[in-house]
Amino acid sequence: MAKEDAVHAEGLVKEFGDVKALDGLDLVVPRGQVVGLLGPNGSGKTTTVRILATLLKPTKGIAYVNGFNVEKQADQVRHSIGLTGQYAAVDEFLTGRENLRMFGDLYHLAPPYVKQRSQELIEWFDLIEAADRPAKTYSGGMRRRLDLASSLIAKPSILFLDEPTTGLDPRSRLGMWGVIESLVAEGTTVLLTTQYLEEADKLADDIVVIDHGRVIAHGTAEELKDQIGGDRIEVTVTDLERIHDAQTALAPVFGGESIVNDSMVSGPVSGGSTVLVDVVRLLDSQNITIADLALRRPTLDDVFLSLTGHGAVDENPEKAVSRTRKGRNQS
Amino acid sequence: MTNIIRQGAVGMGMGRVGIELKQFFRDRESAVFNFLLPMILLVIFGSVFGGQDLGDSGITFSQYFVAGMIASGIVYTSFQNLAISIPMEREDGTLKRLQGTPMPPAAFFIGKIGMVSVAYIAQVTILIAVGVFFFDIDMPTTSFAIFTFIWISILGLIAFTLLGIAYSVVPKQGRGAAALVSPVVLVLQFTSGVFFVFTDLPQWMQSFASLFPLKWLAQGMRSVFLPESAAAMEVNGSWELGLTAIVLVVWIALGALLATLFFRWVPRGEN
Image (cartoon, rainbow over all chains, first blue to last red):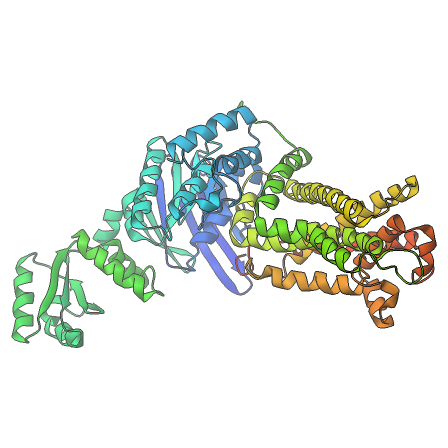
């Protein structure tokens, strides 16, 4: 039943003039689960969250959050959810504590309760020393924590996290993940949007991949990885100019499905580690030296690539490179 | 849900005034640019031209100028302040964040109006104190003048608050908002009889300024701070208080219309 799920959306369409941001999107988030909404920039992730958070009306379709209709019962929906935006929207000139108090007021909470709840959140989010300093003195990670803490002031049962770690350094990202995990352990339902496949892999029970405003795949991280088949091999060559020679040389191993990214060529293989020997032999016969060689399970990156025909962050080549490095470290 | 207290837009808006004032005064640029500027200008202009009389009227320049500075103060604390700060709040996502809470939207605007009013009262108090102690400004004595001062202030604040909220859609980004706002304020000040005696301005400039509310605010404030005889120095030989009220009310209606039509919680392009 639609109303029992934390989030239930059917056939959401959103048009901005001629642009169709959402094109018949269906989404279910069962209570107590973490669902990751994954998609490239402009795929409709943020539009979806904004419709579910009552900030935007869908052109067509219907959505319930906590059993309330997002169009007709916007106020009840707003009382049920916590929303953390793409960038930490904390007020710079207010202290951490004042920010929390302000949100307590906006959620119509009684002042004594707000006072006690703010202190709880300050301690939990490790902001004790900074609590009475203006937020403009905070680091990026501290702002995000304060931002998330603000959205928890009313103890919402459902949390929308719209790219909660975009722009954070790796250490702060790990910190945020820890906080999100403990929220989930307490029974909070989370809808998470992210461009970081690693993040979805780590946090989400269920992943919904969207592109061009439609759901193109849906399942657990493992299910999605299984969809695109078995192991992959990644070979990095020392001489960038010879990367295409390497691709040609490895055709017998990869079939026609290899991908070149910078000085790395990768592709699906079957036969496990014995194929590694073939790779070394084939490249050696062409005098191509190998900088790095890895056999690994497909990552969500690969899933993404095979589903959408482009990477998750396709417009930024710098990020694309760092992603592939990360992928290799995972193996 | 025992911790919920149901608050209407007015109650919550009043609660927001304190928050808004903290933001206003803790932002050093805003505190100087929107709050202290009239005092600074009064000290500079008062020190340079203060003792000079205007023609043979027996009125000092300082006395004329303080009326213009109070009128400008209304524009600074409301229009300039909001037209610069709202784009910043919109750009950094604070407005979007507020929109996602169960706050009635009216509470946001009530908070802004309250903040602007408190800031203006504080500003006028300091401005008059500086004028009286350093430049021998004569204070209005009749209850009629005080009554005029109060209603002109209220209508002016409402008009320029609404116009500031409406104009806040013009700057696309928070950064650079000041560059799109302060020229408007400066042009109005120069043409509305704030820095110069209004009737000394060229005719076309007077006609231009008469379309906008600052000219009427300044003229109304002069009726409060200058002796009755000075009315002869005005364009039509009178303070035209009735017409001033009409012009301000028309601008309030226009401001309300523009603000409702154009106010945005999120930046353009992010529908």
